[in-house]
Length: 180
Ligand code: NI
Image 1: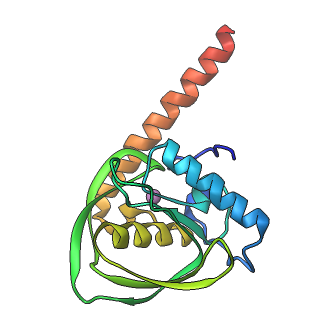
Image 2 (image 1 turned 120 degrees about the vertical axis):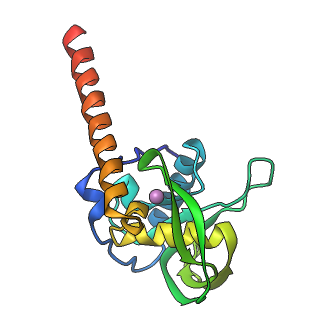
């Protein structure tokens, strides 16, 4: 197993549409396991393949709280086949938008169809936190970030902060190289 590098916004790779997985083979299952390890290490509750630079429709999630036993789900080609009329607000964050949190409104309950790590087709009904995470991660597969669901004013403030942060980090890396 290996830790993968998580891409931080703004980055054009986070805005692309990911391709369907033909079948979940050994290499896909290995990628899923590495994504899960990367997500736990971050730590986070969900991760989509485009966030680690792989443009495939794969997500991993685990809504279990710290004290609860792990409950990982690995999904290829996840697809929302039903969502409730009722919507709810949840505070969301994202490993690709560090330290940014905003209230996002989404359907409260969903039914999702996906292919699991053994190449079996499954369906899952989710509500609460799991529903939010799955919808957030599926968004990543279409190049959508949670900030795309909030006002453009708030979004541009967040993107400005992230751009500035990125420049600072690139600057300090360059400085470290120069002084090495
Ligand atoms: Ni995210």
